[in-house]
Image 1: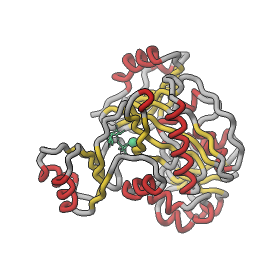
Image 2: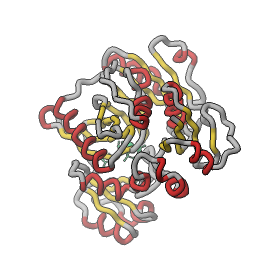
Image 3: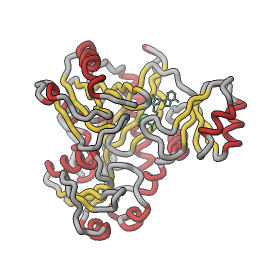
Image 4: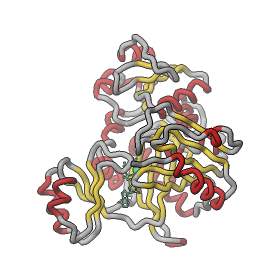
Length: 361
Ligand code: ATP
Ligand code: MG
């Protein structure tokens, strides 16, 4: 099968690599330079977008901000409605989807103007997180507000663009569910993964290391079914949750979704019999999903570092991925998957390596 991926970043590269290993042909389309590219080489083909779309059997994406011209030109090559997927880049549409699907999320209100935000801040008795409707990632485009804070200052910053204001959740921890839905509606999910963020950026994920209560796994899978059914989704889909309450009382609240492969699924390249990229390719090509088996794995992001130290490249328990991107503080430039027996050894790895691999700025 011939697959054209929208986007030429690391997710597109890793999807393409999986596609090739399954015997498919893959091209990437850069939405920044508007060039059609082969995998792995920073060169462009002389093909136009229309030629690449004509060549492809299927068009998929590494990011959901799919340009309107591709949606129009390739509409019949997508396996679902691409405009619906693109609409999720707006947090108001995303939160409405959660409400429509009756999956629990932090209570929220939307605002379109500074005056509307001001009114929300005047009336709140709760600490809030204000998020720009569009364009936020890695904690950017977010502001915190507590009753008593200066309203005018907050409105001046956070009210510049439309957005949402939601309750600040005092969570126990953050987890995510990564899974895939096939063309026939079949679904296949990994166990919940624990994610630790620093300054709003994913620092590391723990997969298969902490015990996941059955009740939370069931809740997460239920949310996965509801959301992906509502979207008639085909491919890998990720859901970020807050865990609130402890023990028997623990509940999930959905934070956000990523209609694509996701950073919190990168551990699966080393820690599962089928990676998230392989699952996505299986979904696109109608290949059945396997029964998933996983090994305890730590995924440590490489953020803003100039390189991955040679000691890690040579370490028998580490698998390094370098994205060949110009390092900047706060920019994800690679990740390292580490086979690790338990939480103690995972935390030792994090203590030893995070400060050498992560420069947040
Ligand atoms: P990503 O890079 O995952 O797309 P993002 O910048 O789009 O991130 P969020 O995932 O919404 O935005 O927020 C980043 C982090 O900020 C969350 O992982 C969480 O740690 C914190 N956060 C966001 N919303 C809330 C909230 N309502 N209550 C408490 N913490 C929050
Ligand atoms: Mg997030």
